[in-house]
Every structure is written in C-alpha cells, then in structure tokens.
Length: 102
Image (cartoon, rainbow, N blue to C red; front, side, top):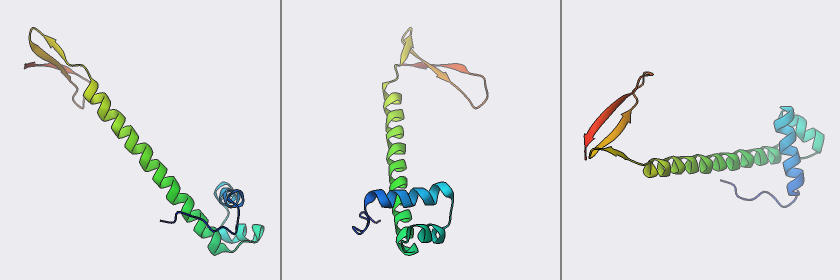
C-alpha cells in the first residue's frame, strides 16, 4: 500500500486531478492532457485514493460491528417469576415468547 504521494505536486493539485477523474468520469489520458501530468502518475494517485477510501470504509465497518456488539451485551435481560423472558423473532413476521429457567 502506498502511504505517501510524490512531493513534486502539491496535495491540492493531486486532489483536484483525482476529483476531476472521478467526477467527470473521464479517462486518465484525457485528464493527463488537461493537466499536463503523466498518466502513470495520475494512475498512482487514483490507486492511492481508492486504497485510502477502502481503509476508511473498513474502519467504519469495524466501528459499526463493535457498536452492535456493545449494544447486544448491554441489552437488559427481563425476568418474570424467576424465568427469563426472551422474545424470539423467526424469519417470518410472527414472534413468539420463549420462557427459560434462570
């Protein structure tokens, strides 16, 4: 995974070129001619952009998983007459109550 872009071009230029490529759905050759930057350089920037996006999405997904797991652990258990009340929801739209001995 590439972690740093070349220092020859500023971050603003790189971001603008990648944004042009993504927004206009132009091919790399057209963007290369428009900005006067080699196509191979632009391809590298685009690749780095997608790697960064994928990493951010993975982090976001992991956070959501952790939040769901925390919520499941923190769910209150309900007891009636010493028996745990558990609502079981099968794949159909119906639900039924399952009594479990504590």
